[in-house]
Length: 137
Image 1 (tube, helix red, strand yellow):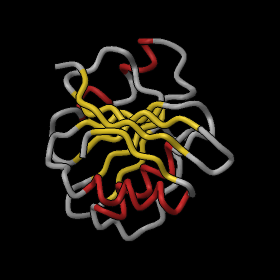
Image 2 (cartoon, helix red, strand yellow):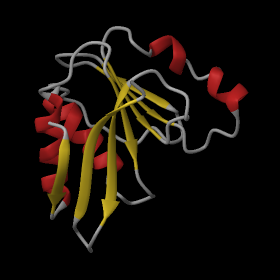
Image 3 (cartoon, one colour):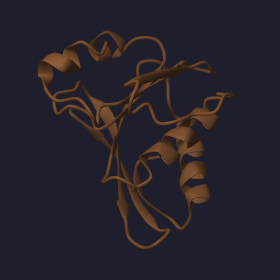
């Protein structure tokens, strides 16, 4: 599903995330990049739906990590409020990488093993340009 995609609504962004989830497998790391309001959490909700998560998915900004059961376990991290490397090491991120399930990370640290990068950019009031690529390989 690599490539560039244009969505024209939150629903289309969610549906793209849902379709993208079909390609995910155990151990995958997905990094969501974009400014505040770019649609990272909407895309993450789509991934969750595509993995068969039935509970409501919300941003883990204040809890740092939310875990959901589905076809694969989804570990949704949000490091917007992390101040430094020491604080990051205490979150459990590095213990979760490459294990069972899928890690989806918003506001990711720079140093990660190979991962899938999803870059979301606002191009209009409801439009998002979403680029999906491999990174760190």
